[in-house]
Length: 145
View: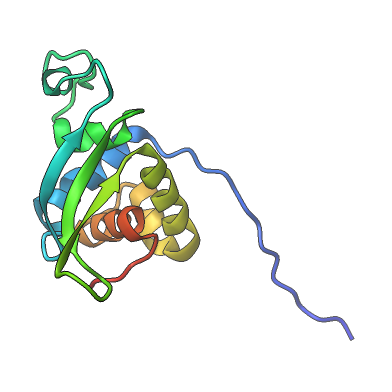
């Protein structure tokens, strides 16, 4: 008797950095405000200043994005976010998000939250998509919502 088997296929998907910037914008403008309280600090690589990320700066992308979207995707830079603590202990904690956390967050999103990842890729995203993205970057899983 033949048994039906489902094949698991891993694929590599290139996510345009602009889509990542869009996810940060949406998360910070409302998608994640119920657990992500504020940006505690911008951690910039040596030799960079906040002005480098603003319009006319050497790292600005010519879009509406600013510091909060561009910093976490720039090598050597990160954001420190003040967030609700999902574990026992203090009510809020600081979580650092930089390029490595963004990459890991996208990997988790693709493997565990395929519908949201597809929405991100297909530009069919909303505040929920951005919230899942940011939680995957911060915690490696969806905890809130």
